[in-house]
Length: 313
Image 1 (cartoon, rainbow, N blue to C red):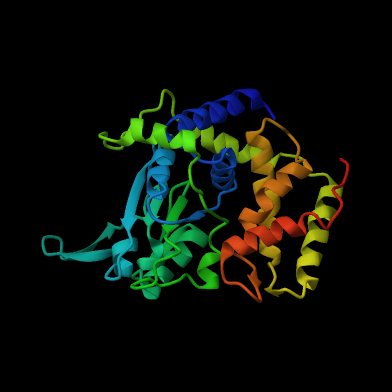
Image 2: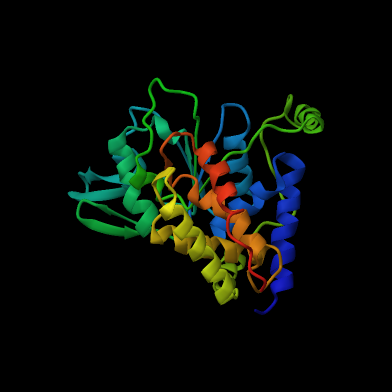
């Protein structure tokens, strides 16, 4: 892997800049960028006011890419997301007007306020990186990264994502509440200022495409593959789990662990990389018999990690 140190310093510098204006657990930033480098999408679920939308804007500002936003509302139509063809009387033909999904980074704010019909318009978009409109297929630019947010405590006027839609998100995380010393910094930064983020150096498209290829070269030891497979076997035989994870989730674990290792300037995956991404990749893909809260799933997965001996690699 050539110039790994150079790329690592770019990503590391970027994360350090973000941490100066947004306050969350350090692993949150590594998880988000790991998801991005694994070519996935991320869902951020947390209570109102903790900065979900602000973080998404900061992430988009850190890259020299196109960014668009969709505000989730019950009256949002599928064509408001993907675009539509409009008749042009001058040419007597239909001209396609692309929707906001035709971008590099897409923020979908309050995705659970979008009706199921419009949510389904995102299925092909997120999985295949293309949209079929009026019988014609439009391929999206690379990269294409969806950051969606939702509030877990609101019920009226909300439409929970079904399992098939949730599975389109590689990760699901929560931000948590800032520490006491961070609250005053939030007041100092945001009290009378509008959200405006200027980075000394942004990630370019060339940086990102190069990083995509280098992440694929990160080495995964056979013992680690066996370790994760054993973890999945435990999940499938666990009597407390109604719906265990699929083989696709297994692939996502290794992809994100490789990206996590890359962000930590390593050419190989270690057990801590697996442990770091394991709950974030699987918490929304399993269903416990006695709980529907993904935070319970998150905690349960951390418990599962203690049941299998960590291999020496």
